[in-house]
Length: 142
Image 1 (tube, rainbow, N blue to C red):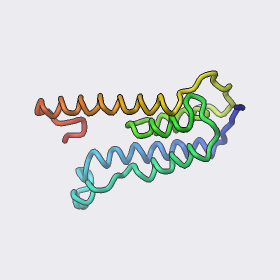
Image 2: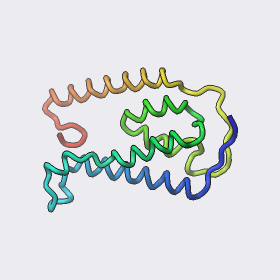
Image 3: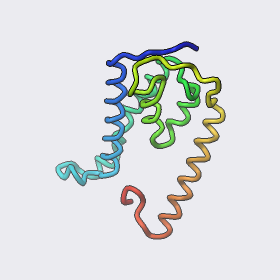
Image 4: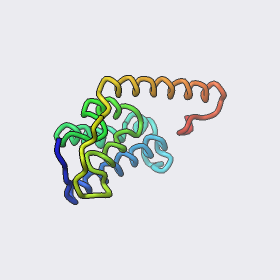
């Protein structure tokens, strides 16, 4: 594993994809509250984060080896909430720096990441179930 530098264009692309994912989260959460001219049922069927997430997976696949976790580990973790944003912000070089970084001696492997993601998903579902049973709306109002 060697050092990897990133140009300003790569940093900009990563920041734009992060903004698109976060905008998609907002649109998914609001379901038309801010866009009253659109049919709520149509908006509810659209996952506004899919295309930016797909771009992230392509960047993971064609890019250099990540520093913190293997490519398989990042793939599994991207199924858990904000991990695609975390990947875009810190791998292989954090967006706030352009110089090369030293390789890490240990990285999270795909198998461990799969198990961690599975456990995190189960905890999330349990918490969501408790919130739903209490009668309170979930984090996005449903």
